[in-house]
Amino acid sequence: MEPVVILSRQEQEYLLRVIEAGVRAAGLHGFFLWTQGQLQALLPHQVLVAMQFAPGGNLQRLECVHGTVLDAAALALLTDARDGLAPRLARHCLQGGRLPALGDFGGAAQPGLEPFRAELGRAGFDNLLVHGTGQTAGGASVFALFGLPQRPSARHAYFLELLVPHLHLALMRLPSPGAGAAAPARPLSTREAEIMGWLREGKSNDEMGQILGISALTVKNHLQRIYRLLGVSNRAHALARCIELRLLEGWAAG
Image (tube, rainbow, N blue to C red; front, side, top):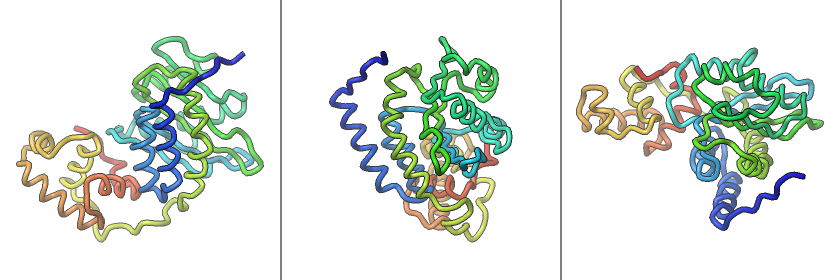
């Protein structure tokens, strides 16, 4: 018999906020802000990989959403369309009827996930949580959360189970890859990409200035130029637009 999970009043409030915000999430910009905002309050994690599979099992779409720096090697290991860890985990769980799936490799992994331990460690994580719609007439959506600050438990799996329908609908509403927002008039410069990369890691203007050897005022001026280039008005929107346009995928902290 499965344990009964009773949500606290605070958890109920968080859940309602996540659902309400998810209804309004539109485009990759909105999907990023939602998953890295309200969703994080209920289910903190480092990386979310959202995947859509066709009825035959072919991967139709993969979105990797994270608010921290993820180096190029780890990103490729997780998200490669043909042999990435996330798609293989998703297929493994779908085919074996293993949803939800918990992996806590700092403790006892759920049976069936042990073969993924070494790869997960190479990507820089020691736990994961996977859930999805299961096989449907229209295919399947699967969501994999990597790097939970607390060991994933049945309680976390229940939270994700409640949110799967809303994540699925938000994923279905996203424009086709490559459609939507127009590319900026020019690429980000090397310095601008560095600033946005450190911004994604949560650094302040002062901290970025110290890392890059420039003043906080110079960082602010760079940010203002980036805002104009991307057609946004603040840091959060600039970061979301960079994620949407995949402008930082080749950047890694030095």
